[in-house]
Amino acid sequence: MFKVREKLTNRTKELEVNPQQGRMISYIAQHQDQGIIQKDLADAFNRRGASITSMLQGLEKNGYIERKIQADNERQKQIFVLEKGKAIVDQINEMFSSAEVELIECLTEEEKAEFLRLLKKIDSNL
Image (cartoon, rainbow, N blue to C red; front, side, top):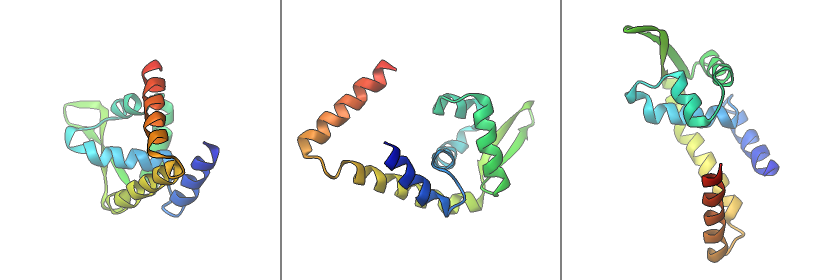
């Protein structure tokens, strides 16, 4: 799994994001119409608030997202993907899709089915 992470890190580096930030931009872009806040990201990515804050600060610094204080709740900030972020979402999604294909291309169809079954079993056990 380390090699997969390394490949993704190298691919996303040119976009000035790490793989986790890339997934986060993609997630925000898909859900921003629902008024996504930091807690939503912490829940979706199973991360602590401090980790999410750090990732968001990096994305904001690079001009990919912005956080806006909500009119009805000054303690919460809604998160939006900016044009620069929207411009890379498709690239990020393609990078992850490509990595997933590379990961399982050496498996037979039976092995792929078994692999997915095992992943689901592991996921349900967490």
